[in-house]
Amino acid sequence: MIEVVLDTETTGLSVAKGHRIVEIGCIELKNQLPTSKTFHCYLNPQRKVSEDALKVHGYTDEFLSDKKFFKDVVDDFLGFIENKKLIIHNAEFDISHLNNELKLLGKNLIKKENVIDTLDLAREKYPGSQISLDALCRRFRIDNSRRKLHTALIDCELLSKVYINLIDQKEPKLDFMTEETRNSENIKVTDYCKKIIEPTDDELRNHKIFIKKSFKKSV
Image (tube, rainbow, N blue to C red; front, side, top):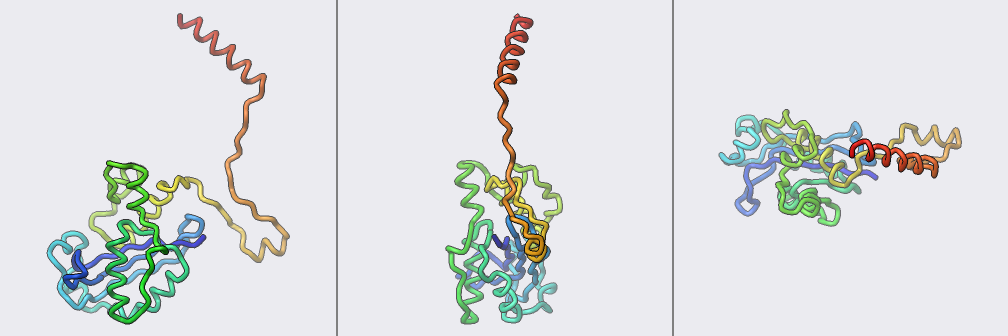
């Protein structure tokens, strides 16, 4: 299973007010494990960054002025996410901005059915609790000390760990063999699973005796 954890930073909150994307970060996951494949770029939004957005990510107009336009990276970006599920925290925000950029270039839009929103997963799993990325990192004891400001790749790294916890996949499937090696050695691949060992009758009987003795001593 191939998925892509995705995050964007923008000039502001509202597409309707003409705000644009200034950064895209993506990390590929295979069976919930990060691969070596990433996509990252800063973008010239062709407009000023709002003061509120600047406080969030720290990307100034001057810093972004010599960066590529979205049209320069769109084909590479679409190629990276093609046929992969997108894992996004608060997907409505990111997808609305991405689809706005795609629409301006006459490209096909990203469909909602291709997106897993970790905000929805967290809201369903922990109703009434704080479900920001920082709050979920605290809940799952994920070190987010590098997150001084919002940056796309760091946020993707954190979200990939949060996502694993949200879907209760603490021990993802491991596969260290190449397809060529499996075929040459005729090895059958099985999914990793925990081995459950049931206690024997004697062990259960001895445990009951131990509990009774312990109870008598404590009385």
